[in-house]
Length: 398
Ligand code: FES
Ligand SMILES: [Fe+2]
Image 1 (tube, rainbow, N blue to C red):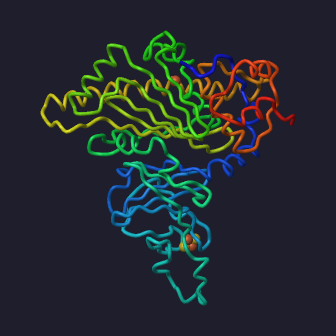
Image 2 (cartoon, rainbow, N blue to C red; image 1 turned 45 degrees about the vertical axis):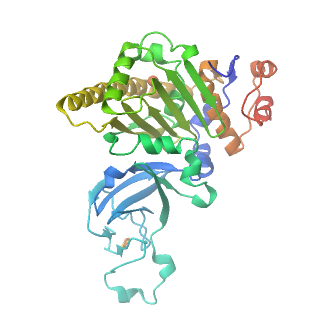
Image 3 (tube, rainbow, N blue to C red; image 1 turned 30 degrees about the vertical axis):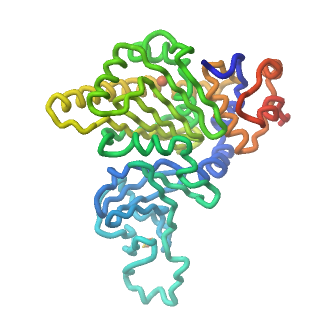
């Protein structure tokens, strides 16, 4: 059952999905002080492996130094060049592509061409900027402002132990890396994953043409996260559960979706798990990054191998098809939002979106204009989990 029985206020306005100043404030207030998913251990598994990516609008480089994983700002202290533009690769050392400065695991310089030209040596100003890196299972996270952020374990609480189990070889193996760019604000794909209201219209072929049953849906709403647990009952899901049991997985007969604010979602099923994170790249663009883990189990016989393969194929095909259908909506929603005269409205099935928006409003101290319907609705129900709801619902005129 859903927690709310009346419609909820769409707290954010089209401005929050389009404005450059607001976008920059989000990066500063929300993203830099949260753990961001960077990659899996498998993607930089060998000594010398590296990869680069953009996190929170900054270029980041991750590198494996003989088994030790390190993260740096991908900016050279000499004259600010990115150390490398390559998305990934393997190199025995860490060198800047421009003048060849070498850097060690701790970010200090190694060999520098014509080093005597830099005397007296400005040691403090000549190191790479190291970034905080922590790991949960096979998932590698980076934080740009760790002093203002809880530890990764705390940040992922109460899911840390389950995530460590569900995203770690050998029982679960990383089976797919899939990243794609979208022409929309990062909140659009994020909010899409938080509601099942669109399922019957956008995904009838893959997920059925009826809305998922409310009685079988359980939401948990919290300032830091929201969850959905859906009890599975279809013949396909029953088959999935049987395969999971045979391969030695822990069968739960459910679809579990956990969203940790602001931008990472984990989905757990009986035979595959995935994470999806939405990385902002501008006010109106973002990059969705997914990693899918398939149940591997311990059985090695040919029957187990076949089941594993089939379960994986079905899971992958469904996930790709569903994401591709959502992508078409993301772009259409962004185009609409840029011309929208409306405030928007949130139904009870979409209540996780309201909680997500409230998190952003609280974190960024946004002023929220009251909505007449919600002033009325406020008197009809009590929000079960958030003390500052009244502040937002009654609003402070901007
Ligand atoms: S800018 Fe990197 S070595 Fe010169
Ligand atoms: Fe969808």
